[in-house]
Length: 320
Length: 280
Image (cartoon, rainbow over all chains, first blue to last red; front, side, top):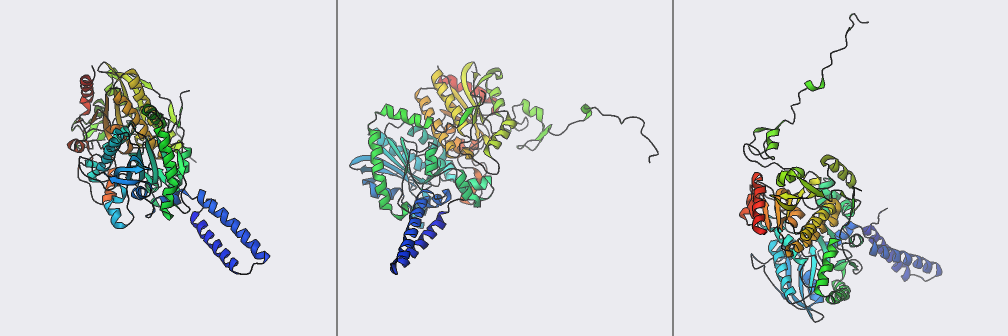
């Protein structure tokens, strides 16, 4: 039987109401035992909820409109954020933000997808789907950081790179490809935080780094569950099944060796308490940066190369 | 009760007198004329009447590009182990097996070494008929090994892509192949060796968005579909019809995304000539 987080949540609420009701009444021995029993159930349900939400439920959390986005993390984690605009070629893409900031006093470079919380913001940010100029801006600012030996922190949260006529005309594929190649050799530490949706190539284009950290309700996939379902089952309603099959949760990806660390979220998800989320993130980010900055650049680059070189050794030699 | 009895056995027609007509002729998608298939094959799948470029499989591609059609294949035995235990309507290993039987290949790319215009060259050719030429861990590994081999042996590299993109059935593992290949191309770039990318019909998704667009030269064939998002996805997103010729090689050339569009019959000469300019 699969765990249903929605049902568990309702059940949890029900039990908590029951406990409240019992607590208000008499305090005889039978009632106390009943409360004890119910409290045990509550602990169990909370533990289940924290560890076992279905992949599809996590997709919903990752897409939650109130989930903190790059600029929310910037506000909570950094000081003196100074946004840098434009790709110096075509324009400025609001779906991808970049800038300079201080993290515990240390100057860093920040790049990240930006989605928006309400309709107006979402439209302005194109739902966090960058066009080529967005990726080119990100690379330009990361190169600027590397030139001055500033570590780079990248926040990944996008449904994907924008699929449109203008994107294709201006070379969406080329922009992504170039980022992959250049990030592999940028001479500065890169920490990648997958905070929401890791939507395929559009996510990967700013997700090549030395540490790949992922929030526990974030997802990272080669295709959206809906897209997968409509291709394989010819039915996008099978998205729930597809989400499971694609192994897109942080824990799945950790066991596949694709990400380094899963970061716990506040109960209920990051949107339930964004300042708390940032608080949980802060020491992990600080530690990662510290470790990476101890490494000489040639070693850093060699390790980064080997990290990706060894991803997905899922083959055998069938000639033997 | 029978009045008549057959005295002799019925005459047996020898098998060879059957005339098979199906598959001998093909309708050209360019000029709508009927062409004799053998004429088409003799012309490397280019319509002899209108020069429409049909797809060419990986083995034929290598035969076209390498001197006397001779080459040594590398890593031919690598096959996938199904990292996600992916099952949709059919288990993934079954899909792989039927693709292997249909193509005689273990996965969607052949990596090989041979002479091209008398110059030792590493050539990778993707096979579109193997699960849409999709890139999983085997394609990623074979191409990465070819790149590393090129750097170690100081040889030029040519990759002919034909692919729908990353292989969905290997999930995020296949996505990571984009990063892996691109990282090794950075090293080839630093080693100062040429990488010529030939994008053939169709090259889309994660293959375009990684190595296919990272050539020192990016070359294509007339009419090839090249893009990041597939045309259907774009139509669904913007809810309007796409202009004629959108995402074709000529469109990309016009928008500055390709260095040249070269007809198939001139492709080898073009590659040999440009490598001559780039290498001592």
